[in-house]
Length: 351
Image (spheres, helix red, strand yellow):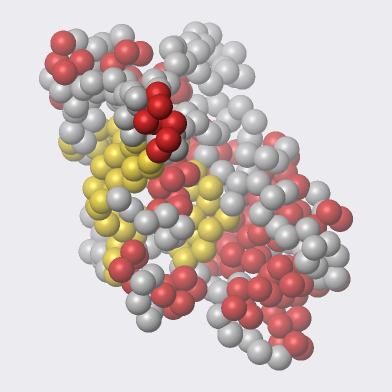
């Protein structure tokens, strides 16, 4: 247990979106308002210099959590604390600019997150200009060149436009922009999902090296479990807006407990041909407008019973792992040790 308080602490975070049809349509069709619980009571903490990865199928709320953490969305309920400060309250006060300098976000699509009309110099310099960190043109150019060098590009790239770069190079530009204000915390929303496998390794190398040199703290969101295994210290598994398992990386990959976590790991192709049977993820994610009662995973779970269908499990700490599962809590389902996960698209030596 670390003596220092965590840099980021999330407490019972909830975000509800109103997805109702327009008022007149609802009156004519006699339909009620509709709400989606995109994030439903999520809680976790991230220590300084560490990486927490969030994994789960599309639509489970990972990206919404990311946007809540950097203040792009306001929470419906709950708190996000950054270095002891409530983010939502701080962003409404005079310290908003200071807080925004300390946290930045790297977006998923490097083709959409960069302004195509701006040069690389303008893109990377924008945070420096907005926060008035550097005022003279010569100083801006010098700092932008340093940032580009830090991510494996060159100062000579400054007058170029985004369309002159590959996807991996564009994501490096996004990283350079995020590092411009010297933040302590980076939220990475699937930063490598749009990249080729070989380029993924290069970008992840840069991110890990920057973390070692600058002591950065990451929230890393990804679908790729092989990537998660390399970059994370702790892993949280989300399903339909809730955190169902949270453990350190070694424990989660060697002894997955929640049936959903096991299902995700079993679906990975066995590139090493160890003879392990590959089990595709069963069933479909329920409609978030009409989620199941009780445990939201029970329609797809082979271990569900009557309690699972009626009572929503709480996130409890069991044998050092936080898990929300009645079968584990009651002892009906035991951890199953498994062989080390094969790095399907990403070899260990590449990182």
